[in-house]
Image 1: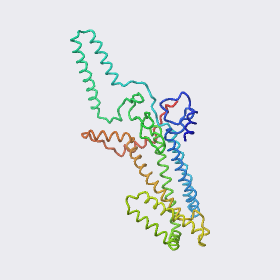
Image 2: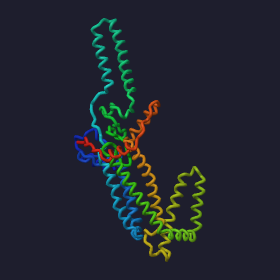
Image 3: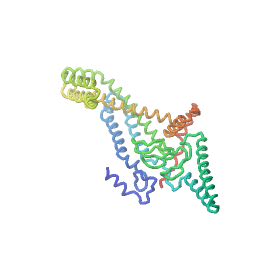
Image 4: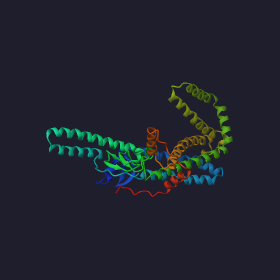
Length: 384
């Protein structure tokens, strides 16, 4: 991994912008997401490829045998979408705001007031100097207090205000925030996703949602195909299960009994997980042996083993539960026309300002937000 990072650093341009230091770049262009998240990017891509290979090796051939050709071919074609959308999210610069050299406006204003007071105090007598300094200090306090009162009187969450970033030294616009993981400000910042190894901002938020939605669609179609395969393998499951208990009843009962015993032991969590894994793996191994030994199953191919289909169904079901929750949450925020960062900022604001009622969303506004999200022009990258 260090050699890969060193290779990318060598081919980067010498006039590398400091604003994009977090990214893995090739000849100045964004090649992948954050450098430190490169293992996450590779791991996520490997996970997607493994799931696709499991379908193509074990589910797809059985679906063709059971005459589900149309559904199987549609899923096989759709399997390419999660990879393409994932690479699009990872390789798209999220909307980084270029660093600047602006001083802090509040500190600058206070320093100017102090300088003016010092200049006027030099031309007066010693007694007047003390009075002016006292009045000046009171004036500074009054100005700072008035600024704080003005900011407090603006009934808006902090995310919608133009704020100064002390790290990037810029006045970041509304809805922009600083990513503490990549150390740069992002326009329309949503969150930093470690799965894709990149910040989610105004330039890749749409691609991120398309990645989630395409992955969920493929998972749902795969679950449907697995269910149809299990429906056709029902009698094989029943026969193999009874045959396993008939020929290896004592080991199977011992393993299930050990799991029950470990389940009653709340502290033995690791042992509990190991035994649970054996419960899923053992029927697959033993059924594969039975299919090769028994005369009735000798003509069966590897994908005819129903317990392999059950295992893949469980894996896909876990992915479905995870993706469904993430999709619903992101679609809900987008229907409100907001990012995760905006929702958190608003929740904190309305929690502190209990007297202010949170505005409600109408159905027409929800559709307008969704239409705007899928049609708004993506801004040009500042990485030049």
